[in-house]
Length: 225
Image 1 (tube, rainbow, N blue to C red):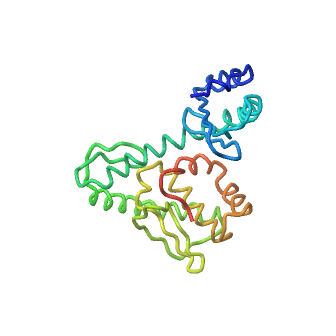
Image 2: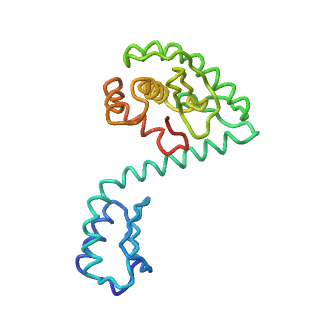
Image 3: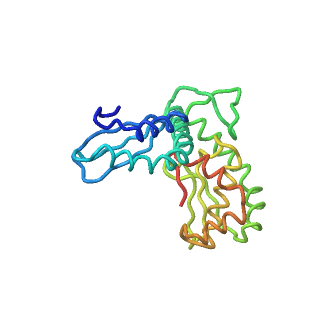
């Protein structure tokens, strides 16, 4: 979608470069002061001032091509994760028996929402003692209390004063490494209460491959405190 008066050789080149990875350039004239960019799955949307020239617009967009190409895979991954979580949330809110995912593997039975919560709670309770025994010495921090609850906006949280860690009951739907990452993340808060650079360095030291499990959970409603 492109205003006809914006066609320039430079812009045609930009369109072709973006198209190589399936990104469509969508430009709209609006009553705005600045050029605004938004990268979405398979689209780079650009809002431009009514008075901008074709050359100015083409040059501004050309500067964003490399950024778009670099970040599009992450945008796509987050979009797919949101879709996946939406499907899981729809299943979790239903009273109709539905397939169960355990540690990211489909099980051969179905459960309704209440049964699934109870099942996940038991599965998580079974593995957490061993996982904390594994990761606490590595992180160099020890929780006084570990609890599980149904959290819709958090995968985990940490009360640093009480040294109490909460885990989301929904974690068993994902690879067990995701649960390990949440445990490491919350244990590291016993060293650093915020998400400072020092905090993330502590996480990376304890769990060098944490990023892939962080990304696996990112964009799925739940976050980490």
